[in-house]
Image (spheres, rainbow, N blue to C red):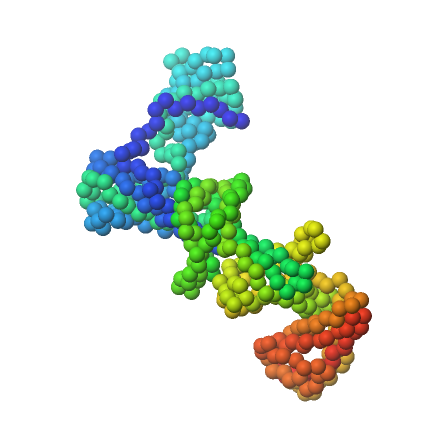
Length: 452
């Protein structure tokens, strides 16, 4: 239930020492974190202190705030800084107006003036010239007051106590970290009929629900895992409804460069990040990349079915060659006159010259079966196991090559014999490439000796 509150005169907020941002520089990390850097020109008057800085993020990390003067680093000294976030609402205003005079207009038009003694959910207690009155409080009650109670703010505000102020306009920079900002990449790939080329689009989705809008911001995105100190006690997250808004793609995508041990993607034009908005921006122009369709059987993930993956190498010579940030990769393929969705996967941050493997689903016509044929204890610290894997291809025409992935759970092992050659991927994984004719099957058998 909402109650009309009319404030005839607001508390003086030292307007002369308030300033809006001339420049917004926003860096968003993919870990619910944003770095806000705002540059403002402000006329700091000695008789109008403290300095107030409005339009900051409601989810600011107050201990991360840094203020400096760009025109002259000796222009002032910071003695104290505060973040005020006790924002005005009808309930807060009335609670703070206790023991202060107010005017109440009842639903019948009667005007009652007095000092507010108490406020309950459905009644007001006033001390009037005629004595104590208890008045009904509902959505038809109108309350007038002469000033906003002290300590309430209409917007989140940073406040500084300064020393050594020269009393003239200064260009200042305020930077701080805030939660409530995130970004991720979204990829869309369209395979040709043979699945040997993929047309690739990439988008960046920036999610801003930090409690502030940043107009014409210079936007940077950081891809990488930045280490952060975690609080000793888990904090209950603040609830906030989110509205989604989609922005039109830019003609020009992000410019990428290495930074420390991360990668930065910088948008070469300003963009506005509204509060409670999801904005999509093109990461780079569409490219056409050489690709392969591959089949993988891993009995630890699925003992019966064979995975289908679209694989390409992130190299410049195949049409790409830029660091790819983590995100969801969706694959489509043309079926006659229609584009059909065939699967999606999530990729991790992928540097240049690395393979990108997108698992799009399970092959309908391919099946596998793995069984342990024999296990024999060789000694107290060693064992010999024989494994048999059968692969079936129920396609009518096409022969396939299936990559069999076998994880080994002991560091010390040896393949004593095998019906097919294998490749050692690392200390714990091997692969077999098994060809299976159309309508046929193939059997792989190997014996493994391992010790501990």
